[in-house]
Every structure is written in C-alpha cells, then in structure tokens.
Image (cartoon, rainbow, N blue to C red; front, top):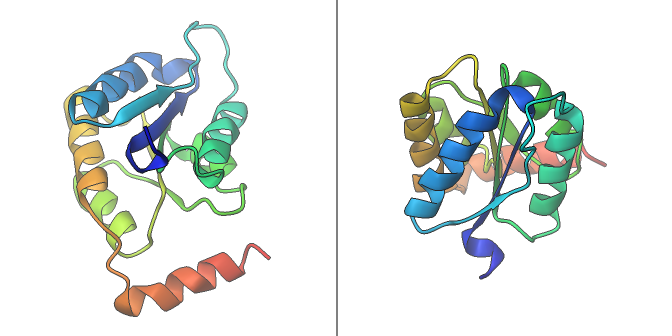
Length: 149
C-alpha cells in the first residue's frame, strides 16, 4: 500500500469508540486505516496522539490524518504544531469539504463529545471526497506554509 490510500487515525481516551467506528468506515471505503490508538480507556494525552498522527502525515507514510478528542480542539492544536500539517476541526460536512478544497488540509479533527457517529462518518466522507482546488486558493496555502519558517 502507498501513502496515497493510507489514513492515520488517533485519539485521546474520550474518543476511542468513535475513532474505531471511523477507522472501520474508511476501511470499508477502500482506504487503509492506520489506527495508532490508544485502546485503553484510561488517560491518553491528546497532545501526544495528535503529534504522532501528524508526524505520519508529514513523513509521507500516510496521505491524511483523522484525529479525535472530546472537542477536537486540543488534539488539532497539537497536530498543527508539526510543520507541514494543516488540520481543521469540523462538526459538519460543509467545513470538512471546504478545508480540503480551499486550504489543502491534510488532517481532520472532530470532537467525540460534539458529533455523533452518523454525523462523524458524513464529515469524514465529505473530507475524503474533496480535492484541493488550487487556483486562487494556492497562494493562500503558500502563505500558511510560509508561516512555518
């Protein structure tokens, strides 16, 4: 399998069931789900799990990352600290599509205490179905990349 069809999934302890449902869903859609845990419901710090997933994306090992915590915010903040990551928190499909089309996002974050399973799967589908449009959006994405220097 190539990075082109690999998606890394990670979460903190609050989002384990939703992460596992998302992993099964993306696998059923033909993606290779690389679920890096955790599996135990005891404390699992979201910064470590956001960073681990982000590093697999920027290394080229995985094309996309899907990360979850209670709100999606903390794990997203950690992932965005890694150079090369563009991750957005989404709680509905429109934003998930737009972060791909306009921002060339390579990671999606969701809150397990914010979205239910059905909505989460719709958000994932919108994110994965969208492609970066380039064009007028490309210079703005380059501006974001320049901030990493």
